[in-house]
Length: 302
Image 1 (cartoon, rainbow, N blue to C red):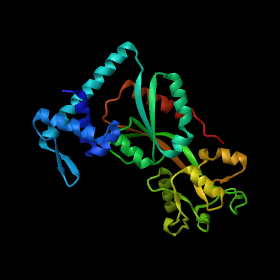
Image 2 (cartoon, rainbow, N blue to C red):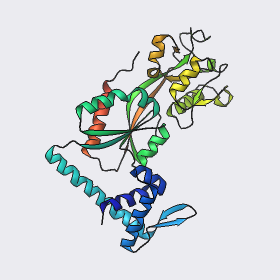
Image 3 (cartoon, rainbow, N blue to C red):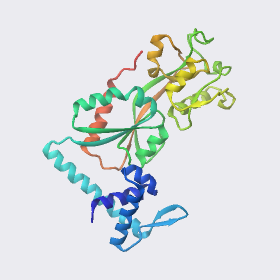
Image 4 (cartoon, rainbow, N blue to C red):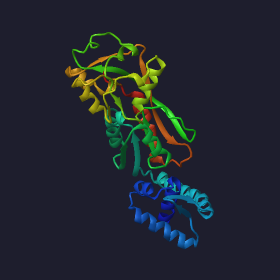
């Protein structure tokens, strides 16, 4: 039996969606379907039930999953054992990050890692916190770094760094000259949010709720899907917002924006997210240990 067919089957069984499995495997959906059909012919048994555009494992499929878990884990262990004997550090690791971290925190980490391990390929996938957590859960990435809290018993979640968030306004704004701003002082002004699923948005909404601000009563001109777009809107005078100070140090230095601390301060943590049960290769461990050390030492720009 081709181990590739077993890998394809295992991926489809994990997400129960042929289209999603094809994306994870970087294959076309017809190619994935063909591999599954070949495996079903070899076993002379249906492995998936297909009804109303949904799929589920048959009893035979569930049995194959049990053995596939063991076979693929042993296969990975075999490869890693041989690499450990030879000192080989080559291959591919996939890192996922929420937008703020990917744009403002990771470039330095990835550059340093590449210099340390020049023969290792790193694939970076950027999405909001919810999407990154889902990619870790379905094994499409090896390590996630996110800016929102993660509530999952199936994943290993570890804090990696603390981040301060501050109000940003254009120069000349009524709040620009204040030493600090309380949450209730923001209610008269249009407030620009990130999109649903953003870790930044979740942290801000929780902060408002904890300090007596009803998010439903805020004047929200619109939502935007990136920090860069939000900064541009604030510079244009459309509204105000709260962002990580690390994302605006250039604009502050140029005088395009003004950052005002919040009172009480708004601090949040960045988190590493990994599979609890997934077999970890030496490369995955190298990446995780390197990232943890990097975040322990990196300083947020002032």
